[in-house]
Length: 162
Image (cartoon, rainbow, N blue to C red; front, side, top):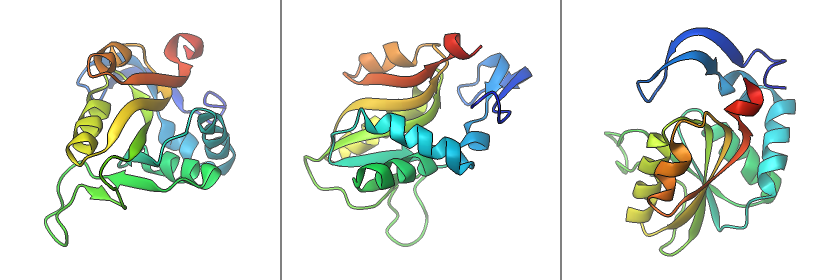
């Protein structure tokens, strides 16, 4: 489905991690299609037994919302930066001390965004030991997350897709 909707593109790209790549996986093309988003949520639901779901803006928020609807588990939206108004919080949604949170991601390369999200949630008192991702590019995210005692569970690996 990712290939059929045009989410896998070939060319010269710079990734969020700063790495250069000959291919790009644009999950936003997939996550804006209800049929694909429903399938992603259904597949991820098999791995969720936590108290909350969390996803960083922008790419992971629709996935977190869809997974929340699929599982009836509340979700938290994580801002990339502290907002300058209102509560000035990077976390939107209710989080209680000691709650177990699963993080969802669209694509992982080195895991930098996931690690940042884990650290932010842990600082807020959450227990985090798992990240679910639609596509793992297999460029270090699993190993980097393991260093902070977090498992990466991909629905698709780049080696299966490319």
